[in-house]
Amino acid sequence: MMIDELVTDYHSRLQMRPGISGLAQIRGLRGPSEYPAAYSNRIEADLEYIKSYSLALDLKILWQTVFSQLSPLSAPLIVLLAMMISGGISFLLYLAIP
Image (cartoon, rainbow, N blue to C red; front, side, top):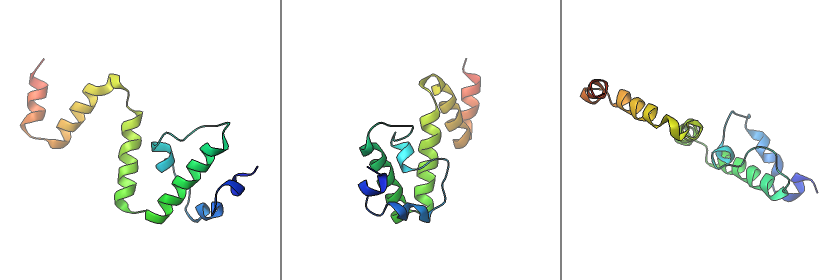
């Protein structure tokens, strides 16, 4: 069975240029799969993006993509980054505390 037979409006997903990440990827729907339903879910996520794309949604996808790639071992890096972004005294205190 072909994917375009599984998903209505399959060809509508070609309205947008492909990107590095997307709704399907941040939802964990990536890589090869033996199950047609997995491809169906990916395509439906692409169609959902097309129907509701916005700058806010793009920023959400970007943030979740970056966050998902950080391992639990890099938690101190996340804290440091948050402090740098917030700026001010909190960043200086972080540097002063051993």
